[in-house]
Image (cartoon, rainbow, N blue to C red):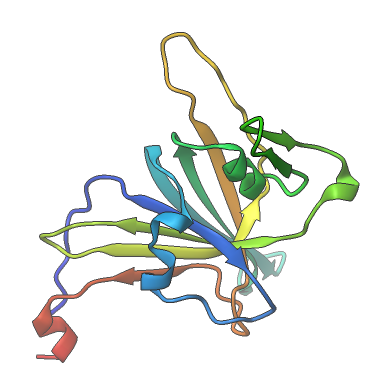
Length: 188
Protein backbone atom coordinates (compact mmCIF):
# COMPACT_ATOMS: atom_id res chain seq x y z
CA UNK A 1 0.00 0.00 0.00
CA UNK A 2 1.33 3.44 -0.87
CA UNK A 3 1.50 5.94 1.93
CA UNK A 4 0.03 9.31 1.07
CA UNK A 5 1.26 12.34 2.95
CA UNK A 6 0.54 16.00 3.44
CA UNK A 7 3.29 18.10 1.91
CA UNK A 8 4.08 21.25 3.88
CA UNK A 9 6.78 23.82 3.35
CA UNK A 10 9.21 25.00 0.74
CA UNK A 11 12.65 23.69 -0.13
CA UNK A 12 16.02 24.23 -1.77
CA UNK A 13 16.63 25.24 -5.38
CA UNK A 14 19.66 24.15 -7.39
CA UNK A 15 20.73 24.99 -10.93
CA UNK A 16 23.57 23.82 -13.13
CA UNK A 17 24.23 23.98 -16.85
CA UNK A 18 22.86 21.07 -18.90
CA UNK A 19 25.30 20.14 -21.63
CA UNK A 20 24.63 18.10 -24.71
CA UNK A 21 21.55 16.64 -26.28
CA UNK A 22 19.93 13.84 -24.31
CA UNK A 23 22.81 13.87 -21.81
CA UNK A 24 22.21 12.03 -18.56
CA UNK A 25 21.08 14.17 -15.67
CA UNK A 26 23.58 14.53 -12.83
CA UNK A 27 22.83 12.50 -9.70
CA UNK A 28 20.90 14.07 -6.83
CA UNK A 29 24.13 14.19 -4.81
CA UNK A 30 25.96 16.01 -7.61
CA UNK A 31 23.12 18.53 -8.02
CA UNK A 32 22.51 19.25 -4.34
CA UNK A 33 25.67 21.24 -3.56
CA UNK A 34 26.14 24.80 -2.32
CA UNK A 35 27.96 25.57 -5.57
CA UNK A 36 24.79 24.69 -7.51
CA UNK A 37 22.36 26.54 -5.20
CA UNK A 38 20.56 29.10 -7.36
CA UNK A 39 19.66 31.04 -4.24
CA UNK A 40 17.51 30.71 -1.16
CA UNK A 41 13.90 31.02 -2.17
CA UNK A 42 10.96 33.03 -0.88
CA UNK A 43 7.35 32.29 -1.61
CA UNK A 44 7.91 28.62 -2.30
CA UNK A 45 8.04 26.97 -5.68
CA UNK A 46 5.54 25.47 -8.08
CA UNK A 47 5.65 23.16 -11.04
CA UNK A 48 2.87 23.44 -13.60
CA UNK A 49 2.04 20.86 -16.25
CA UNK A 50 -0.38 21.94 -19.00
CA UNK A 51 -1.48 19.50 -21.72
CA UNK A 52 -3.25 20.57 -24.93
CA UNK A 53 -5.74 18.33 -26.69
CA UNK A 54 -7.44 18.21 -30.07
CA UNK A 55 -10.93 16.78 -30.30
CA UNK A 56 -12.38 15.59 -33.60
CA UNK A 57 -16.16 15.36 -33.29
CA UNK A 58 -19.00 14.80 -35.74
CA UNK A 59 -21.69 17.45 -36.19
CA UNK A 60 -24.24 15.49 -34.16
CA UNK A 61 -21.91 14.86 -31.22
CA UNK A 62 -22.25 11.08 -31.49
CA UNK A 63 -18.63 10.18 -32.16
CA UNK A 64 -15.41 11.82 -31.14
CA UNK A 65 -11.74 11.19 -30.74
CA UNK A 66 -9.39 13.13 -28.48
CA UNK A 67 -5.62 13.19 -28.82
CA UNK A 68 -2.89 14.87 -26.84
CA UNK A 69 -1.18 17.40 -29.12
CA UNK A 70 1.19 19.38 -26.89
CA UNK A 71 2.58 19.52 -23.39
CA UNK A 72 4.11 22.40 -21.49
CA UNK A 73 5.75 22.43 -18.08
CA UNK A 74 6.98 25.44 -16.14
CA UNK A 75 8.77 25.74 -12.82
CA UNK A 76 8.30 28.98 -10.87
CA UNK A 77 10.06 30.22 -7.77
CA UNK A 78 11.05 33.42 -6.04
CA UNK A 79 14.80 33.79 -5.53
CA UNK A 80 15.60 35.87 -2.45
CA UNK A 81 19.41 35.51 -2.24
CA UNK A 82 21.15 36.26 -5.51
CA UNK A 83 24.04 38.04 -7.21
CA UNK A 84 25.19 38.89 -10.73
CA UNK A 85 26.08 35.25 -11.43
CA UNK A 86 22.46 34.33 -10.66
CA UNK A 87 21.28 36.84 -13.27
CA UNK A 88 23.46 35.09 -15.85
CA UNK A 89 21.45 31.88 -15.28
CA UNK A 90 18.16 33.79 -15.56
CA UNK A 91 18.96 35.71 -18.74
CA UNK A 92 20.50 34.29 -21.91
CA UNK A 93 21.96 37.66 -22.89
CA UNK A 94 23.65 38.41 -19.54
CA UNK A 95 27.43 38.81 -19.61
CA UNK A 96 29.37 38.93 -16.36
CA UNK A 97 32.78 40.51 -15.91
CA UNK A 98 34.69 40.85 -12.66
CA UNK A 99 37.42 43.29 -11.69
CA UNK A 100 39.14 41.65 -8.71
CA UNK A 101 41.29 44.71 -8.06
CA UNK A 102 38.30 47.06 -7.79
CA UNK A 103 36.11 44.29 -6.31
CA UNK A 104 33.35 45.01 -8.83
CA UNK A 105 31.21 42.54 -10.77
CA UNK A 106 29.45 44.03 -13.79
CA UNK A 107 26.50 42.36 -15.50
CA UNK A 108 25.44 43.54 -18.94
CA UNK A 109 21.98 42.41 -20.01
CA UNK A 110 20.50 42.66 -23.47
CA UNK A 111 21.37 42.38 -27.11
CA UNK A 112 19.79 39.38 -28.84
CA UNK A 113 23.14 38.62 -30.48
CA UNK A 114 24.56 37.93 -27.01
CA UNK A 115 22.17 35.04 -26.29
CA UNK A 116 24.19 32.05 -25.08
CA UNK A 117 21.47 29.42 -25.73
CA UNK A 118 22.31 27.59 -22.50
CA UNK A 119 19.91 25.17 -20.86
CA UNK A 120 19.99 24.36 -17.17
CA UNK A 121 19.02 21.53 -14.86
CA UNK A 122 16.59 23.07 -12.36
CA UNK A 123 16.38 20.84 -9.28
CA UNK A 124 14.06 21.50 -6.34
CA UNK A 125 14.27 19.53 -3.09
CA UNK A 126 11.51 19.54 -0.47
CA UNK A 127 12.95 18.04 2.74
CA UNK A 128 10.60 16.11 5.04
CA UNK A 129 12.12 14.05 7.85
CA UNK A 130 8.79 12.39 8.62
CA UNK A 131 7.26 11.53 5.25
CA UNK A 132 10.36 11.57 3.05
CA UNK A 133 11.93 14.04 0.65
CA UNK A 134 10.48 15.09 -2.70
CA UNK A 135 12.59 16.14 -5.69
CA UNK A 136 11.38 17.85 -8.85
CA UNK A 137 13.78 18.25 -11.78
CA UNK A 138 13.41 19.88 -15.19
CA UNK A 139 15.77 20.95 -17.96
CA UNK A 140 15.13 24.36 -19.49
CA UNK A 141 15.72 28.05 -19.13
CA UNK A 142 14.03 31.14 -17.77
CA UNK A 143 11.76 32.44 -20.54
CA UNK A 144 9.68 34.88 -18.50
CA UNK A 145 12.31 37.54 -17.95
CA UNK A 146 12.54 38.99 -14.48
CA UNK A 147 11.75 42.03 -12.38
CA UNK A 148 14.06 43.40 -9.71
CA UNK A 149 12.05 45.53 -7.29
CA UNK A 150 13.89 47.57 -4.67
CA UNK A 151 11.26 48.41 -2.05
CA UNK A 152 11.82 50.26 1.22
CA UNK A 153 9.86 47.74 3.28
CA UNK A 154 10.51 44.39 1.63
CA UNK A 155 13.31 42.13 0.47
CA UNK A 156 14.12 42.01 -3.24
CA UNK A 157 12.94 38.71 -4.66
CA UNK A 158 13.44 37.77 -8.32
CA UNK A 159 10.59 35.67 -9.66
CA UNK A 160 11.92 33.14 -12.15
CA UNK A 161 9.85 30.98 -14.49
CA UNK A 162 11.74 28.18 -16.18
CA UNK A 163 10.11 26.55 -19.19
CA UNK A 164 10.88 22.84 -19.40
CA UNK A 165 12.37 21.31 -22.52
CA UNK A 166 12.66 17.56 -23.21
CA UNK A 167 15.47 16.09 -21.12
CA UNK A 168 15.74 12.69 -22.79
CA UNK A 169 14.81 10.69 -25.90
CA UNK A 170 11.40 9.92 -24.38
CA UNK A 171 10.47 13.61 -24.27
CA UNK A 172 10.37 13.76 -20.45
CA UNK A 173 9.60 17.28 -19.19
CA UNK A 174 9.46 16.68 -15.42
CA UNK A 175 11.13 14.15 -13.17
CA UNK A 176 9.31 13.81 -9.83
CA UNK A 177 10.98 11.66 -7.16
CA UNK A 178 9.57 10.85 -3.75
CA UNK A 179 11.05 8.77 -0.99
CA UNK A 180 8.95 5.72 -0.23
CA UNK A 181 8.54 3.93 3.06
CA UNK A 182 10.40 0.63 3.30
CA UNK A 183 7.32 -1.62 3.02
CA UNK A 184 6.06 0.13 -0.15
CA UNK A 185 9.52 0.02 -1.73
CA UNK A 186 9.95 -3.71 -1.03
CA UNK A 187 6.52 -4.55 -2.47
CA UNK A 188 5.12 -6.03 0.76
